[in-house]
Image (tube, rainbow over all chains, first blue to last red):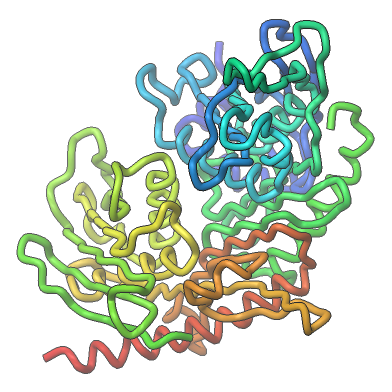
Length: 272
Length: 227
């Protein structure tokens, strides 16, 4: 039997949330700048060259990396390809219907691509086997199996962890046959230059900055801020969409400081 | 800031349209054409009983619109929504269609800034959608030369300057709300291939705010020139 509180939550989500906010707490009991716990399971998919499963609270993302050999582009003969993609299928949340990828999935895939390219996590020239003839293509496919908000942070973490776990077979180019030959025995781990992790925030009612929003809080927040930080604590990208908060502290300053602190807390984890 | 080129196209089948470009001619500069139709009939699936539905469609000059167009269209919808009063016309549709006018394999910052400015001008040209303010956008680049030890910020980088930049971002500001007529940031997107500090981001934002004010003044002057 559902109790009155959950009925009220369904009918008036904004008022329900406001009541919690005025008591300085969120519906799941967290403080405004508290993050959910992260757990990871790396290397469990044996058919992929690298894999990771990340759980950010209840948001669960599985990511696999598959490598393929292809011809490089004509104007970039010494660079390989990194192709990230995030899928939000109907299994992860009732708000996604079966069918082609929703706009949200496409937007997140594009943002993840931007974040990985901007951070230069894997040097594309290190993926070159033979210039102009053979390069590695890394397909980084992430699938959400349970959606409870903040899929962007979880997906980026999963992709980074999967790339760190990736081992490519040693490849040589045979001039005589004009083909790349892969060794069955020797595997080389992927060279990772930086590990970007993103921290996302939302602004509620132009005043409260909420870190790591859940799927209930997300539609109520009118502004989103994402800060991508690498392992040195350096900023890679900062994005703010929507009006700033009207409080005394500058929104971006507050979010950047919180993101840097969170990044150094995450450093202790072994998978990133 | 390059010279702004603003034109009100007068497209036939839509309610309002405008062209905006950074640079004195529409070719060879970051330029975009946008049109607004609204409030018009909305599909039943997209109908919202308390406010108008705002839809943005973005097309690059060549190729079919892909994931990047979808993502940027979603961003533009989110950043223009604070400037228009949607609750005035519930159960209707406000449709913005933007066409990039220069061939670019990627939507880079000056083009994105042109797209946002053209959209705002089209909204003003239509006049049928109540607005709360004007959104003006401008791009800022981070440039490190071999001579100077520290990196410097440049406003509205031109095409030949783009290749020597290490960081670029676009900032959009909402003018018109607030007592002093100041501007509030509605979108900022800053990324750099080498690390940057927070002070630099704040400086870039302030530089962009000044640039956006000039864009705003340019827009006001263009309205004065129209018939």
